[in-house]
Amino acid sequence: MRIILTVIFLAFVLTRPLEAGQLELTGCMCNGAISPCETCSPDLPPPNFEAPLVLTSITPEMFSPDFWINRLPNPDALLKTPEELRQMNEDAHREISDLIDVFKMDLSRPGGPIRDQIELEYSAVRGRILFDIHSRTIPKSIFDNEIKPLIQTDQVSSRIQVKWGAATTATSVRALPSDVKMLEEIGDIEFDQLQFTLIKLWTPVGILHESSDGRWLYIQAPYTRGWVKARDIAIFPSRDELKRYVKPKDFLVATGESISIFTDSTLQRIAQRASMGTILPPAGQTENAHTVWLPTRGAGGKVVFQKGYVDFKSDFTIGSLPYTQRNIIRQAFKLLGARYGWGGEYQGRDCSGFTQDVFLSMGVDMPRNSKEQAFIGTQIDHFKPMREEARKVAAIRSGTPGVTLMRMPLHQMLYLGEINGQFYAIHSTWAERISKDSDQKVRINQVVVSDLTLNGKSYLGSLFDRIISVSEIN
Image (tube, rainbow, N blue to C red; front, side):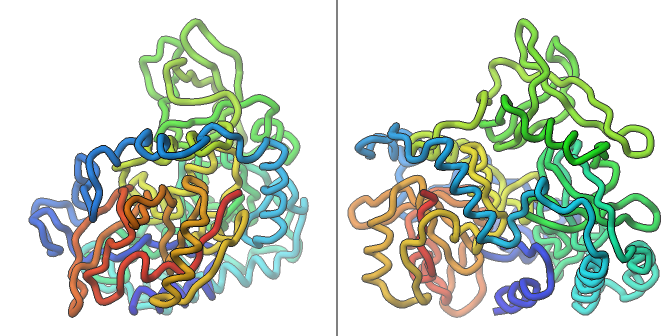
């Protein structure tokens, strides 16, 4: 109930609250139980499991994408043409307010709503009782003496002339201009309440405001708004110039969990890694690599272009992958065992971050929030938790494996198929509750395959019990 009430509150007052997947952390589980652990650094989570977990009725062969693909009658059928995907994206932008086309933003906008939003976000967080990584209550003086002077809302002009930029690396979008981890409960180090999400390399942004020390920028990105570090944003001379690089006719798409971008054509020095769904503008090629443009931040924050090199053997495509069941399921299974990360923390993916990355590599403009993701494509049916079992079964059975999303409050899953009356999904989750009488949990912390009986031993009910909508991204 604590998590549900908190998220409802944040959904009302914050621009981009994100789900934590299923559950919350209290301490760590290096010793098999959720408790403080002397072997773990207080500001780092415990290490992840080295292999996917065997959960519910899962058998080893189910860890292979081919197991699920081979059950399909025509997995290579094109579900949507590029033109149909473009139309679906346009429909989503019209219907979902937080899905923003940065290149359709006005060149200038009223400053009042931006000032009010920044102050609202500040007040919402300041009003909560939060803890630092050392289990101490966050004092209000941090807000009053350190953060409040940074946001300088009195300097927001009545009419903002938007500046345009791109992320030079994957970077966090924060509720406030601060690196301080603010936790809802003592030991809750996985879930920093200031963390909105992680935007990718080359993500375009509109710059709306900056902190008094110039170290933070308040930005609008395609699916989130908040504070990012200025050092991670390169400023372009115009919106059109930014679009030329972000929306090129030809482009590379990272289709692996992440791919290396090198600084040299001999592929010896890694500049950074681009996560699944990252779009890279081409700059030619060498004997063994594609050359891509990388934005870097120069004097005054202005963009300076450098060349990066992507090995021909890396997991990428030229243009988006064809929208087929085979490709979607293969993309999902490339993330099997990948670390869970609330809002992209620790370079991980939460439930909606997982589904977003899978579909981004197909060219689908997915929102970041699971509730909004459920409105992409076709809504099959909606339910009340713990009720309407027959309707729910019928809705799931009517869904297309690979493109069907099953949503719970605060969680999202990708449907794989039905075997012997059991429905299976692949999803990113933190933990499983295992007690009818308490909040006892077993740590999962990764992308897993499970049937929908998972969590069924808890007082909250199973995944199936708590599904509230089924939809197809089709």
